[in-house]
Length: 376
Image 1 (cartoon, rainbow, N blue to C red):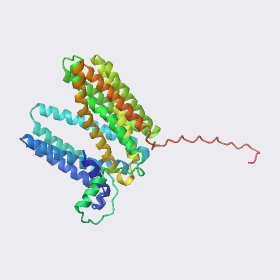
Image 2: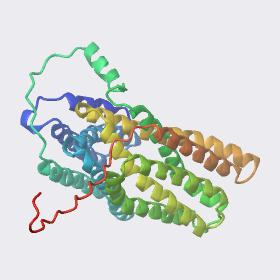
Image 3: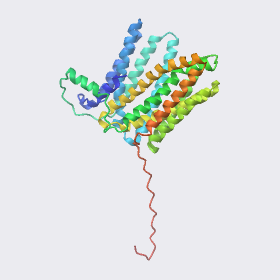
Image 4: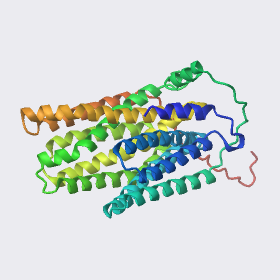
């Protein structure tokens, strides 16, 4: 969680690879480490080894992702960042679905090692295609200098600082994003418990899988069109609409008493997520300083990951405490507080400056017709 801003900051300032650019060397490094660790995990036999490898893999993935994120504002003009953000989110969802699906099939056959090796090959193949196809601008090769411990600590601390003059509104954007994403993550984490405790579903796991599938399809379908729309009408309107829709849909869960109702409301929540992710990420890409995109977008992911951990940490005791007083009360309290958090996040986003100014097309001047015998 803490790696991305620091890795992004190093990527922003790197110039030692010259014609390879600032981002691609770190993407290649992170991808190589992830692939190697996946293969290593395939042979792990103890919990301690798996935990250690997994932690190292998270750090390695953050190194690659921090630089990949920085490429979007580096290479995409402002008027196309919404569309690029939509494709980015759609690709992430598609990759997640493909990985879970294929991995689940192989793991179900007892071929967990093969699943990890296939994952490593997919990571290398997809990112190699990306690295080869990217036309990143070369940078002037800089001379390496010795860096002391004090310099390294100063750089690490500075990775988490936001310059309000260079990025006006970015702090509010991160706070609003954290509150909205906290609601989404808590709903995802506690969906199966809610279904089992409140809806008397015969197979809570299957119902939860159906709910997640509906939400995932909604995100996937809306990611690209929403991004393109954000380029046309601006970032703020879609962010605010997604926040209000998500809050109202979350509050509606208090009234859900049957599985069809849950699936309908879940689809609305998924639509909110799909709209929000594309429009919000394009907004963030607009706000970041051009030379520090890796660091600032790494902070955006830090807000997302922090919201996920914090919301689930608080939601558990809240649900247990409420249900101890009355069956179902814990979930009603959870949904109500999450809706309030989403409304608060939306209010924060309303104060972030719009970055995509949409100018109306000028009206065509009426054509003049020359009449015979008349001089202008």
